[in-house]
Image 1 (cartoon, rainbow, N blue to C red):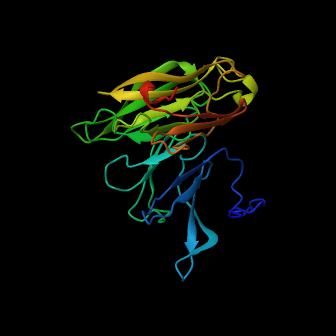
Image 2 (cartoon, rainbow, N blue to C red):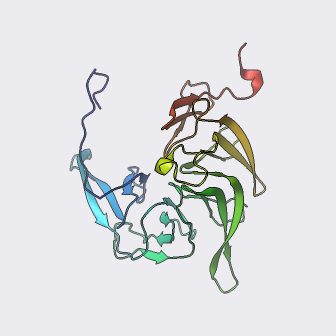
Image 3 (cartoon, rainbow, N blue to C red):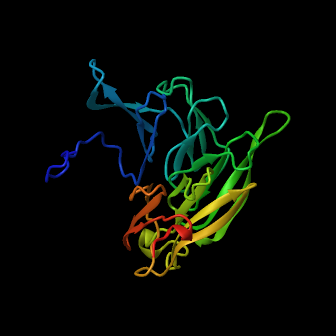
Length: 275
């Protein structure tokens, strides 16, 4: 960071991990500093090294998780089994975290689902408020947006029941949870990616859109922020930002993509808009 100077930012290489599209940032060890997890195979965790004086050393320690099935397109994190540790989620299942997330031999792989070409991230949320975290996932390169309900049988077996949120829109590549309407509850914010895989994905030439879904009693209700063809409307690309840009108390959306970069300012209820 040039700290306000009219200079370029300095790039520092962390590691060579192959071809990746995204990375996950989460504080696995709950020390207040996020770890970096590239969305690739094999699964790597990069932890920022701290100097003896307590300041960041500008270097990362690489940990390779020993597992056969994890990694690849689609990834996320959350406490799947309610033990207080942050697990890692992938398109083919989840990795259970040991008490020490840097114990690379201690992670356990559970191939409990097959999400296909999943969004980045895959999210965890107790959708139906039964005390168990469920998962939310978009089809990054196909039609559909879904949530999977976690169920535990009397013998302790975990299963996942698939529920459709939206089956008529494609390329939900990035999905996020935010309180977009200031009601104290999280909404699912997402949209369609434009021109993924050079228009070869299903629905790639369909209209673009930016949406949020209110979650009421386990049901998802869609609200449209933007909709239409490229050049007149926006999607959300492979990543978007939700932040109160204008400091009016309502979260805005910054949506970059191949169709351009768009800012959606949130003014709250219509009565808040100044004429």
